[in-house]
Image 1 (cartoon, rainbow, N blue to C red):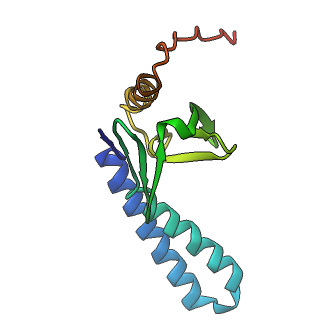
Image 2: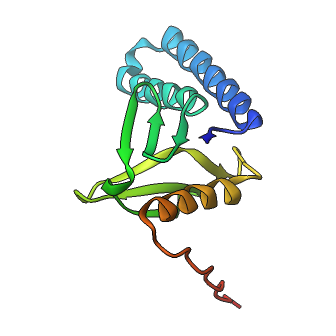
Length: 147
């Protein structure tokens, strides 16, 4: 199963990244002395452009994470699959045996780059992990009322 950004997320990410890149180029043309600010802005522009290209492939052996390169994680290396909130967005992270946390490029959802299928995609990754390890399916937790 291949999980990537929704088509809307992909287009929005590329357009925002390209627009921001144009602004950075204009800023450099007007004020070359802003060196470090322009380098930092350029880093975030490239990161935004690459966000639209990342994807995750889930199979019987584990998870392949594709960004610029490919990283492969076997199911036995993964101790948990978590859905986390980070700066106004929701994303899926893999916790590995060696203590590292790997943020998946997809699924991801937020205010600007919203993915309506985020919950289904995250649940399918968790289900594949529990099935591969022979764990019983997790019971859904009740949502705490914050009222």
